Image 1 (cartoon, helix red, strand yellow):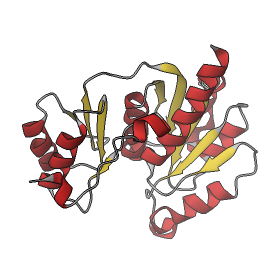
Image 2: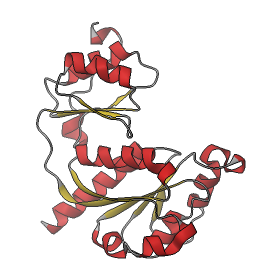
Image 3: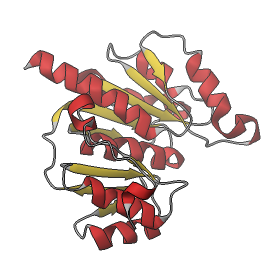
Image 4: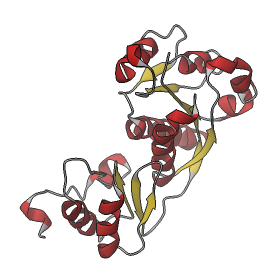
Length: 222
């Protein structure tokens, strides 16, 4: 399948933004995903495809045998030349059910050239759990806080650290959570300063923002 029949590849994005064009898999056939990946490979040090299925991975692997599939994160990754890992970004999830979105954020951050630490299952139902990790929250250059249900975790974290907090709502919750809308609105109305909010289940978007913050901090401290 000729990639130029359905896509226009942006080979210059690495030079403009610091990371190559990323493939968003939903809405594309497995063959299209694989053709785009193969088209990017000659000029990209790293390829990332998000929201990927196992079938899409198999198609990509036929073109790029060294590609790997991060199942929880649903990310296909191929690294010809891994980016240097700099700084420190923390990805904190409220509950185990929020794990896939947190994994998407963490894997994307690593591929973008960030050192990453993860903190799991520290939602506000047991406030003492997040308090154990204050040193990490204050050491990292940026914190991604992933939560569904009441969406309270980012506000709690923002009250414990002076670092930027990227609030990431998930669609986890009972009926009145409205597939993450309740968490999104709670995060938009967070009382502490220093909280920015991305869309529901958008771990990749949170990683993009956090990576730029972390790289800027790493350059400033170099």
